[in-house]
Image 1: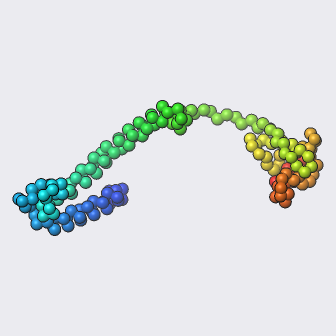
Image 2: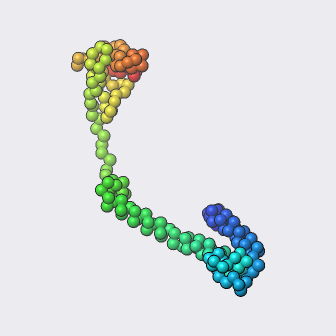
Image 3: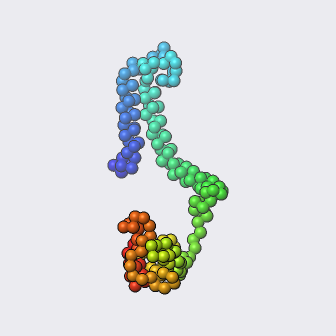
Length: 175
């Protein structure tokens, strides 16, 4: 049962394949000396030429292919992946994608640095001092003319009912 669960695609394929081969075998009249050749590859061979030899070959061939794939399939996959990774690492465009170029560095200590974001508002140019690498957020310090910004609503764009900041005690209260 484990084999069937792990190889559902093969099991279904092989059952359908066997069924088709049995239909062909039963539909044929057996071996005929007139139609020598391996069915269906000989021009003169007809369905009547399908005999036990063809049945045997067509039923054993998928099993052999499956066994070969199971035996060496993982090795082929590993070799293929290794070859492709080597090609990726030698390509300067994809060098950063390759695991070989990944460097394991010690995590750097994050030192909170501040930056200033200048924002034009209806009350003048507002300076927002933030620790974020881009943008600003609630709780950031807001200054107007190098002094804490007075409390109130600062319109930053149009429409004013959507684009505004609320400053309270020199800090952004809401966006």
